[in-house]
Structures are given as structure tokens and as C-alpha cells.
Amino acid sequence: MSVPVTCFPLATFSESAETSKGRRHPEAESRTRNAFARDRDRIIHSAAFRKLKEKTQVFVAHEGDTFRTRLTHSLEVAQIARSLAHAMGVHVDLAETIALAHDLGHPPFGHAGEDELQIQMKEFGGFDHNVQTFRVCTKLERRYPAFDGLNLTWETVEGVVKHNGPVDDRLDEPAWKAVVEYAAGWDLRLDTFASVEAQIAAISDDIAYNNHDVDDGLQAGLFTIGDLLEIPLIGPLLGDVRRDWPAIDDRMLRLEAVRRMIGAMIDDVLAETARRAKTEGVETAEDVRRMKRPLVGFSSQMAEDLARLRQFLHTRMYRHYRVNRTRSQARRILAEMFNLFMAEPEVLPTELYERVKGRDQGGRARVVCDYVAGMTDRYAIEEHRRLFHLEIGREV
Image (cartoon, rainbow, N blue to C red; front, top):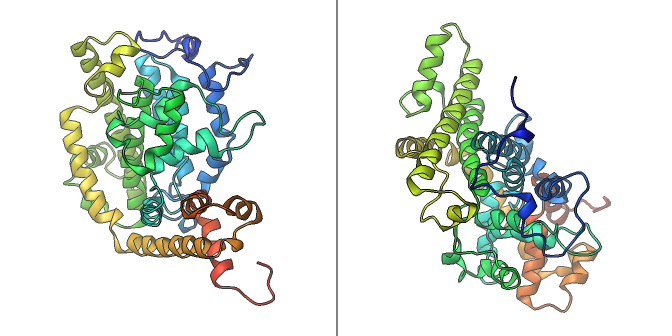
């Protein structure tokens, strides 16, 4: 009989909800959930999380019903994070929470949207989707009368900011000013690694997007199974599946190979993390933060294989002419809206127009950026149509 997740013994270097550093704005504890589970629920109930259902992963949300969106990607990352955290004996709720939150700040149209907002905000403090996620969690979500943001625990906020590692080398960048100002009043230890749970969320993101971009790319016809046969990791797995199921069709071959690749990557992370923990003598959560490299990671062979796979995806998928055309259209849409809102703020929705009145150019740009970054793909396309393709007599 399997042991329930709630009874799984925590590793000595796990975070603990009972010893959390708490919330910036003190609140009474939940009667039914630990502090990290409560963070998870606040993220799931946020407007930013709901909007992920129509934000691009690689393909614009309306291009197909089964391609990944930011929402389905985030759910898949969270599922992998839960599996890894459970297997390592660390805090499953915290790993899941950070995984669910990690893309909340992504603008519409994926990395094309981020690239365009970086250009538009270059003279006004910059734009970074990780910082925008932080701002969503600590300021932009307005659901509670006592504070702005979601008032998440210190461990969750730290994980959101540092899941990819220390950020002290980025603090001079204008886009990171919001993090610097916030941390001045609540030390997030920006020069250390984050918890093992945050690192699990980060590597779960890598596992999810590498596997699912292969799946989506094949389904979209951007490359073929034959193109993948010589690519490390996925190629041998395709051969294994063919040997196990000689009569298998291409759809099932794709799905089974991707399933096995996820399993292989998870097994590699578990083995490599155990090796690092033993080699480094990691015993406490503080030991994890003070390491000179991440505790959670891929083996050198897996990292090398993934680099080859990413290069293939970059060439054959992310820079495919069909994807490039969508990127080009997306950037034009965002650039035209941003410039119009800056030049004619009176066309902004009333609430936003009231916010920009009396502000300097930098203040106006930040409000406009937050508005544009918070749009879904569909809303951005419709808003652009309303602004630039006005049909006389139709309500706008």
C-alpha cells in the first residue's frame, strides 16, 4: 500500500510552513491549509492566473485547441514539480506554488511580447517578465482590502524572484528597481540561491517546455519524427518505442516518446540532486541557500543532450517562418498600441486614464506597460482592432 503524500517524511533541507518567515502584512493563519497551500490558492484565484489560458506559449492561443498556452504549461510545470518534490521528500505545496506562479508576468504573445515591451520601455525603466511576475504578486493584483498584491509568504516571494538563482548581479538594471525597493523593507537575500522547492520549480519548467515544445512542434508540422531521430535523448527514445510497438502510429509514437523523455529527465534530476546533496554535505535549508551552485540540476550528460535538443528547437521551431510571421504581427500590435496610449492617453480605459493623469512620461509608460502586459492574446488582438480598424457606427 502506497504512503499518502501528506505522510511523506520531509528531507532535512526542506522548507517548513510551520517555520515560515511569514507575510509582509500579518494575517491570521488559515484553519484548513498550511501557509504555502494558502499561497497556492491565492495564485490560482488571481486574475493574472486566469489570463494565462489565452497567453502564448509558442503558438498564439487561437491557432489551435490543443497547443500549450501559458496556463496549460504552468499546470504541467506544477505537476512535474509536485512529482519531484514528493520524490525528494521536500515541501510539495511550496514547489507547486512557485511553479504555478512563475509565468504570471508574461505579456501576450510569449517572448515576442516581452521583446517588444523591452524596446518600448527602454527609456522608462525597462521590462522583465520575472520582475513583472514579482510585481503581479506584490502589487498589481488587487483582491484584498488590507493590502495590494497577494501578500504571499516570504518563501514563495523569494522563490518567485530567485528560482533561477541569485539575482544580485541584476540589481543595477532599471527593470529590477521594483525588486530592490521591495527588498529594502523585507530582505529577500537576493545574493543567495532560493530554496530547494524553488529550484525544483525552475527545473520543472525546463523539463516541461523542452518536452512539450517537441510535442507541439510535431503536431504543428514544423518538423517530423524523422528529423528527430539523430537528436540526442529524443531520437533514441523514438527508436525504443518503435522496437517495443512496431505497428504504432505516428501520433501514439510521439506521445509515448515524450512521456518517456519526461520520465528520463525526472530520473536524471533525482539522481544528480542526490549526488550533489551528498557531495556538498547538504543538511539544512540554509545549506541549500549558501551553495555555490544549484542543488537541483541535470547531470552533465543530460545537460549536453538538452543543449543539442534546444538548438534543434531554436532552429526548426522558434525561428520557423510561420512562428516568425506571428512574432512579427504580435510585435506590431503591441508597439502600435503602446505608442498610441503614450501619445493619446485619453483613449485608455477610464480607470487607467485617471491613473496616468499628472504623471511624467516614465510614470505613464509604466501604467501603459502594465496594461499591455496584462492583456491576453485575444484581448490584445481585439483591442488593436478597436483602436486601429474602427468601423463607423459600431460600438468601440
